Image (cartoon, one colour):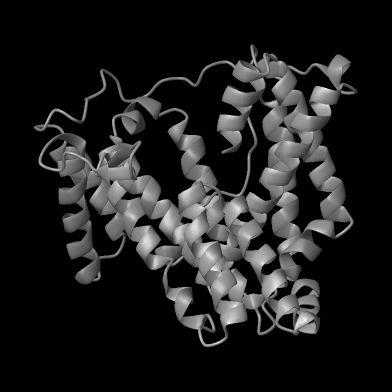
Length: 339
């Protein structure tokens, strides 16, 4: 969502340069650092009611699975019904289904690293199917940062367009980050008995600094990523998981030809199965209380349908307040939102 807004809305539709958009991302990062220092973002995380926190995890799971199904071509766009079944008897969709079965068998047999072995096995199978293109080299130097390093347009920071773009980046990124942090933490059982996330402030500082430094290095918003759920699903519970992933990404900079050969059909099974893993918190949602269950359901269903974590949270929180207030339980709404 943030990348689409950066490229299609700010640059193509509004006619601004990518340097203008990067400036907005940089300022957004600075504001996030300030808001995190003042505990504003942490307060937002704590304010989400516990049932909705579990619902966010489930919604993210469906969202990830939907992305995997789309990337592989198992489902394709349709003007009539949003999505329809793709041509699953051939091409990338067939490869993804085979990979899904293969990875599922590994999981059922409790093979350690089943998701990774599934990606590797599906990539290899894609070679005779003509879907995996072997690279002409394994390693290469990463491109220079010089053309994109610190390319800002500070001359336009006081314009109305900058205000609109900045506010949009800020709103979407804030709730995407909060949703991902809460959802993945719920799946990892890191929330305490009150539904709060210990050391949330440190996690949010990492996110804010990532956004700021990323803009300096020339990339759109660096934010907490829903694919973090893959590491959690495979057992990751500490910062060592993130540090290990960062180290692997650093190595991947020099092995990009090797990693670029992996087709989307090979990673799709992992996304689909991670989506499945993320469903377990639904058992913690109180489905007997409709003022709790309906907002949770809207949170879950709206994330994949709107293609946005932020939209799912907005529908969930909005309906939570409305239902509580109109059923004479406004005090519960206030306690839930205030934590």
